[in-house]
Length: 389
Ligand SMILES: [Zn+2]
Image 1 (cartoon, protein in one colour):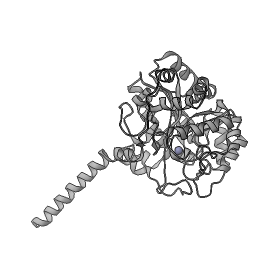
Image 2: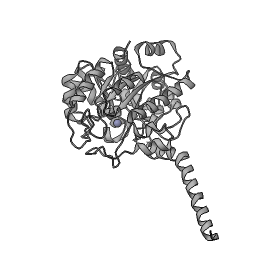
Image 3: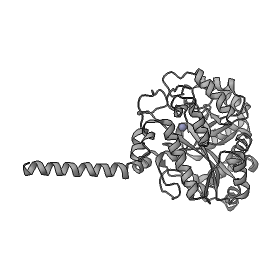
Image 4: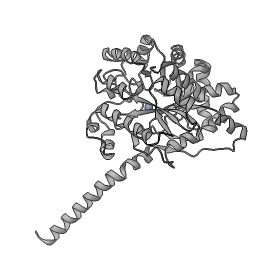
């Protein structure tokens, strides 16, 4: 080989090696920072009485997607919305950790198909097990494992809770700094089209499953899908099976027809883990007053989100507006926090900023007992009543 050709090859291999190093080392964190943005918040000094009241709460939130990004949960970060130190700072006692297993490129609220998938590259960059490169069920197991490994490494800070007894035990017998983590899934495509995989996910500890995410799947239509159909025959079978297994059914992102079918079939409480209300913010993913009323009538719970797609802004007052409307229509026992922290969202209220939400609810005239319910007690009550023994 001539010397110039050799040089060019050397440069080529050098650049390729550099690209590989960047891909595996920096890409996952780069993507995490790009997608999960912490916005500036006006944070007036809080009176000591409000701080003390917030510290006396058992805060609980229905929706956090942090497990997708590979972020170290145990370190405090200056981007995104959660990690264990910030959850503790916000006085969170229970957090539902939801896993995302497939998202279409060009993702939007109006219409998406299932052909593309942005998560595959992320799984490879995170060096997830090869099975998780192509199986969505494996992606869910991989992310559940991430939470379990953190809990095993830091038993004083976190426990994965999937039954009533361990939740009771954690709430009553452990330090208030220890957080109960409950596993959830966004969209039944995570079953890879197979009803049998429900058992696999049940055994992995999953206790809440959303019917659909951004596209229609074999079980149910999405509010953002192409056809937006209701529950399929397979979906109805899965619905009954989830009720039998005491897995909560989450209607967030479900199409209006799928919500209708679910309301018709439900014999147990239905939840909407992260949403807004159409009255305040007319989005395809938000709930009408009729839906709010009927979901509450199942004994269920509506988690109000903190991002602009749910409340049409991201400031604390917009979140409170949506909460007050939901309370007015659904009743105080049926509204909860549904932050969508780290769900590829831009938010002002990160976990450690929850005291300002408490302050805003009190400022709007809500009683302390009612604030307590929304901030956590409603979700804790529902889980203590519905988790398997
Ligand atoms: Zn979501």
